[in-house]
Length: 88
Image 1 (cartoon, rainbow, N blue to C red):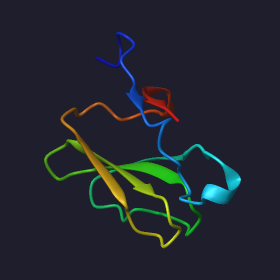
Image 2: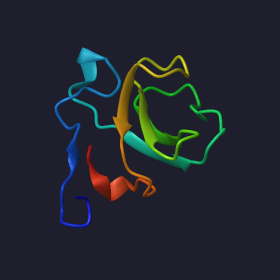
Image 3: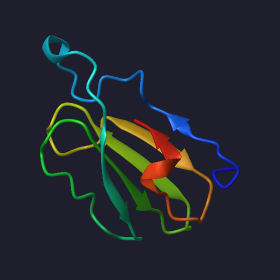
């Protein structure tokens, strides 16, 4: 569990898909409630969470800056995700 120190390790993923600048870390944007549209800004490397209608969470990552998710993780928890849950 996250309370016990478990973390989701995303550190091996180049968050901006640009090999010319090395391995860039994701930037945590935040967690957004049910029905909220993912507020990607269009910058590469954004990571955020959106709650589903059932209360679980989708973790979304935009690596190419097109303001849509390129990576999606589903978390079966109703606890609101925090930046500390991730190794970026």
